[in-house]
Length: 218
Image (cartoon, one colour):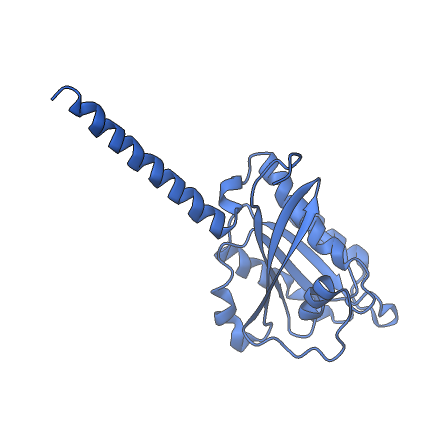
């Protein structure tokens, strides 16, 4: 941790949800590799990757879980919702049904994730303006009414892809700063185990000291 960083070993678990074919995997791939993968195969179950970013001089490791949109994989994907502090729900602006399904994904996520998790709605494929079925204003209105973050993007052109992950991470970071989220609950599992070992070592040392002090009067 650098001298300017406020927290140590922050690690945010993010999950990407949405109907099959809306571009979830392409968004994640573009964020990691900064390029569009045209022939990306559909996710079976879940896919995982990680990347470290910096916001306000604070290093944050993102643990990103891309979930399958098909109904038959839904029960498998739900196993990976737990512990997520950021929920990204993607719809395709050229398919209104994927927008209509946002509320289903949102309710599903809320049943398995933390109450204080941040939620960002993404209208993907905004490079296909001539095929648009969902207006920007419709997406914005839905998010305003439900107190959610909102952005449109294109995994094809890279438009706003980085901003998706920076926006939701900044929202989580703000919640930590404001005491809504305990920073100790979003540190890396390795750091958490090390803290546990340090506490146990301290307790053992205290017990040993107490025993030694008691022997002085024997």
